[in-house]
Length: 460
Image (tube, rainbow, N blue to C red; front, top):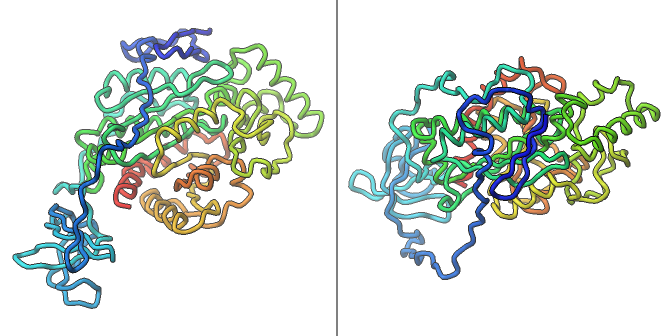
């Protein structure tokens, strides 16, 4: 059953497979479509930064509190690792900083004397005395992770309930509409008008990779649920989001996901149904598939136009060499770069938000890629982000240059066209679509990864 909802931003929302499912909250889907518009924060040309004052020793004069981020930190009588240690202090120790150096060392005032510490191991973010908090999975009662199929309608209902419960900490934006009339949503956690940094996450890029959408929604709920009370290793989630806003698009390709999950019954448009049958018959005749129609659609990666969004971005699009020259379930890069509404919506958000770090979720492999052929120092910066995430996730870091695999890709575009550090995180280890049996391991690996990446971005 189709249900058309007119949003106040004049976007028509058409939900797939509405059925008679009872909403989990008393928020109607019409209420959920009262979206905030995305805000692009432009620099104020009339606002001048405070004048930088350097003393005779070359330090920028400051007066602030910093905290130790390593297990222990040596406080030295002079800058440099070969100088005498005045004292060793533990993680989280608050220090009074009096000077910021451009050469790896900051000056502090410690126990009535001037001393020096490496600025690689301090942060201006507050570190709480209590480094842990009582996490309970039972508190996360909105996003249901007990079902194999997490579909578009479930996501819409969950977005409505998240907005009702945590509206003080989030905004919900509709950033585009797909061919089959589904909306593409962006969740914004924190205040984008105040924060200086932005971290951008995207899931549901490929139809059959719908487990990535479930993860993004669960991560968003976790961040919102513990926004006021949670912390990572002593860093309060609230302060992290106040300094580095989270932007997440949980389901970039809802049409492709509906096709992979529900086959032809997941499609609204008769035109698209006709196209899907035609593509299947052509691929069957040409030897592109030996599967039945339903199985062909189960492994559907493309959008409703038969375009693989992994190859539709303009970075070396013409060299993508997928070998697929017509719309299909996988591999077709489109008639031209950025031809698809999903690609266009994503690019608009990147332009408006100007992220400091981008993360794209895929399946499978349990690894993190960062090398898309970018030059230094961007390569080392991306590597640092990847290694920080891998440490907490216990994932492998893929250090190899993605090469042709980056041609036409979202990650290659962000890295090499936009100059934004980008990570490609491949979740799980089984075949796509991933079995629900893998979700607990994925969730345990990823739960603190957003906080870790926020910290990295803030301290870079």
